[in-house]
Each structure stands twice: as structure tokens, then as C-alpha cells.
Length: 72
Image 1 (cartoon, rainbow, N blue to C red):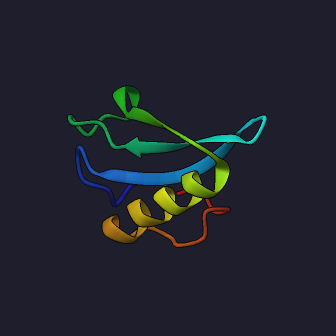
Image 2: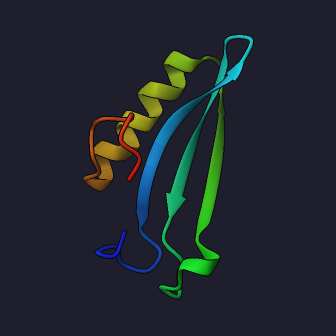
């Protein structure tokens, strides 16, 4: 995370919320560059497959690790 710029996306991954549902967590570096106020956004999805697809797209656009099992 130390190479990230203020406000940029540093991680995006799918999570299973149970009962066949899922969501994507998108982690953003703090707008001030301080680790204490980083932002985490959650996108609710219809199922885990959709969450995995969306997380993959976020990682591709932001040039993050393509392997969702390796959190940035």
C-alpha cells in the first residue's frame, strides 16, 4: 500500500455474505494520504459470481493484482 497515491483504489475483492449472496469491497487510500482515514465501499451483488466479476473488473481497471485471493 505504500506506493499508492491519495484517494486511489488499493484493493477490490468479492466476499460471500451467505445464503448465495455476495458483495464487493473496494478499498481506497485516504484522500490525505494518511492510513487512518482510508475508505471502504461495499457494493451489494445478486450473487457471489456477480461479486467476483465486478471485483475482477475493478482490479483490472486500477491495475491491481488479478488474483482476488491476494488482498492488496
